[in-house]
Image (tube, rainbow, N blue to C red):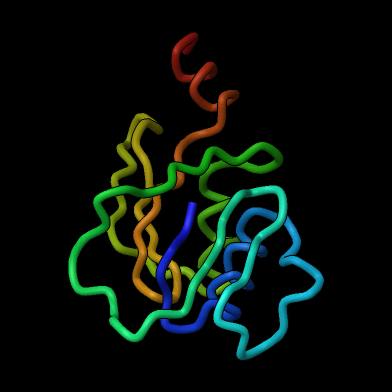
Length: 119
């Protein structure tokens, strides 16, 4: 998947942190393309900025932490809160944006879904 950006290197660095996957070893600051290895994400620097809501977005489901812990981690690495769609019963998701405004969602873990279904 190719994602337009104003700074391919910086945005690839953010998603590298989010996904815990490395940026390709040959990529350096200022490069117009940056690949996050193992994710199939290629960031390309373009002159135009983002102007509208995403037509496609990622849904992340944490594996080693709860949804709420993952949201806190992502906010700490540079994501911005867009909308909190969590409900009192634990269902729902959180909409975040990367440093260039691309929205993505953080869902509950499989264990959290299972616990609410059996509770």
